[in-house]
Structure formats: structure tokens, C-alpha cells
Length: 529
Image (cartoon, rainbow, N blue to C red):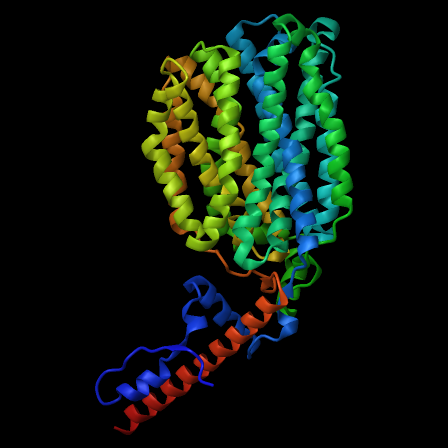
């Protein structure tokens, strides 16, 4: 039975021969260009079509456990960030009582930013460890450290009780959190990416950031509830501790789930002998030099994309609650509810955008969101400073939509930039450097710029700048939707999909041989003539 083909007519007397050579099976013609190019490259290196041993089938129960456990870790991490962002003014009063209101706020944000200073150190420590001993073991360790740091904050005495030791202990706890987080997000994205079938990586990866914003929403919702139930003096006295103490049980649950996970398929089995040699070479003591010299281009793209995502992220999650209360003079209840609505909107959008990136590609999604940020950054803050609830709410929703556009494809895009053998370490370097330099400092820098310029639209200008930088990174990033990860086998979700891929590879192989034979004949005819 004749396979379905798409014909490309030839021209002139040799048209029929050209037509035969250019008949493309429909399954091959339907492949996105980046997927077809990658499969052709692999088939040439292998010297033949795929067999069953060349395709990894991921079992659905195992995939669900991997996604859930990874997302829960991010949920816990961002539960703390949501709590800290909403309690920044209260924490300033508890730990820096002698300073002015502005100084208290800046000191609180400086302590918040301190965690990001040590994040690259965590990435440098946990990244190579994850490439050597495995992703699962490292992710269990970072979960323990993160829970300990958050739980510890809830027990630190106030400045009135132990004096200068109070802010010092707060700083230590935040740095412990930052150190553990340095190995958390890069490891979690790597883990999910290496478990996900190629065609669904955008959708499944978006669940990681679904956990991120669910955690933030839960943390901010708890603080909002406490603000409604308790007086300001009760919040300063003891109420602020409650959200941090909740992190203990969450950490135990997350640790249990991560200990039940199996190692990612990509880490268990390299694609072929060539990749095994690369892994041995690149996990040696020269790994960092190897990453910086051989992976500098994807490293720069990673930094640019992370900057684009995290400036918006920390602008909305870290600065917006305080911006509304301290700069715009809005009540804390109103400000908290507005940002909480924005987080719920991100949670509702993010998996749909992740699925969209599987169909239209990662680059179009990033590009649309970056252009949107450049165009809408200042107007969004103009809406925020309006009176009432409708226009400020619309401003929050605009920023939340842009944030969802960056967050949804990140967990699938960033790991695809690097090969399996150095993925964890490279992510640890690129992601954490960018977050430390540009993301976590956003609340502190923006608050300083607003205070010095006396212009409450400055945050919008800051978003425009990050959008422009991010747009450059998007221009240079390779499209990875549907493409197998570097150094990993093609990943599918069923035996039927595996057989389909094997059949497609056979058609590609046949097409390649036909094109090669046709080229040889044409070359021979030209020589004779």
C-alpha cells in the first residue's frame, strides 16, 4: 500500500525525476522544522533508523509523581516568598525598629535580596553534584535545607528581645534559604524536562511554575487572612510568625514525595557512547571551565531569558504589595487582595500557555510577552495608581498575564539549552547568576529608584528595560518545542507514539537515501555532459 506523500513538482525535462526524489511522506512533512532537523542529525550520526531501544517511553504514573514532587518543592519555596513579600513592612518593624519607615522597608528588602546573593553559590555547589550523583538526591537535600531555613525564621526572637542578633539570625536564615534555592529551581526544571515526553514538555514543565505561583498565592492568602483577623500590634507581636511555622509540615510532605522518586531517564542512560564520553569529560574537575568555554552562548541566552522572566516576577510578587501600600498609600487589605487576584490569574493561565508553547513554539510565546511588556509596562503602572479597584485591578491583571507568558515556557526552554551531562550545573550557573543580579534585587532597586526620583512610574520603565534585553535573548534562542533534549533519547508517552516515531525515522532515512542517490545521479549526469 502506497504511503501518503506530499509532492513537490519538478521543472523542465527532469521534472519527473525531481518529483520522485522530492516526494515527502505526510508524517515527515508535518514535523516542525526544528524537530525534523534534529531527527535527521541523529539519524546521520546513528547511521540508520531508530529502533525500540532508541526511544524512551515514560510511564504515566512515574511522570505524574515526578511533576508533582518537583512542583511541590517550588510551591514551598514560593510560599515563603509570598509570605515575606506581604510581611516586608511588618518584618521591618520587628527587626529594625529604630529606623524610619523608609529605612525599615529598605532594610527588609535588603535582607530579602541577601538570599539571592548566595544563590549562585548554591548553584555552583549543587549543580555539579546533581550531574554526578543524580538529580533526585540533590532535590531531596535542597528540600530539607529550604524547610529548615523557613521554619527557623518563625522562631527568631525580635530586636527588642535579643538586639542586633535578631537581624543577624534573620539574615542567616535567608541565606540558608538562598543557598538551597540555588540548587532547587535549576534541578527541578532539569528533572521535569528529562522526564517529559518531547511533544508535551511545555505543558508538563509549566506545572513547575504552577506550583511556584500556587505557593505564592497560598502564602499571600494566609497573610491576608491574618491581617483581617489580627490587629497591627498582634501581627507585629506574634502573628507574623505563623506563616513561617506552617512551612515545617509542608517540607516534610515534599521531602517524602521526593524520596519516593526514581532518577530521571536522561540521567540513567546517556543517548550513546559519544554522549557518555562527553559526560565523563564534562563532569570532571574542569566542568566549570568547560561550561564557560563551550556553553557560553546558551549560557548568555539563559541569563537573558531568566532576566526577562524574573524582573517581572519579583516586580509583581516581591514589590507590588509594598508599592501599593508605601508608595500609593493604599490600604494593606486592598493591596493584598489585588496582588492575590493577580496570582490566581497566573495560576489559571500558566498551563494553558505551556500547552500553547508545545503547538506554536517557545519563541513566539516569549516574543509576544516581551513585546507586550515593552508596550504595556508604563500603562500598567498608570492603571495601578488610579483610584478605586477596577483600574488598579486591570493593571495587576496586565502584569500577571505578562508574567504567565514568561513563566509558562521557562521550565521547558531553559534545560533544553544544555546537554544532559552538564545541564544541572549550567542551569545552576546561568539561572542563579541572573536571578541574583537582576531578579531578587528588583524590589530593592525599584524601591530605591522610586524614592530617589519621586516618580511612581519608574517600575514601568524598569520593566521596559528588561523587556528589551529579553527580546534580544529571544532572538538568539533556538526553538526547542518538540525537540529531544541534547544528550537524551527521544521521549514519548506511549508505545503507539514510539512506533510512530520509529516509522517516521524510517521515512526520513529513506528520504535521505533517495535525496543522496538523486544528487549522485544528477552529479554524474553533469559530469558526462
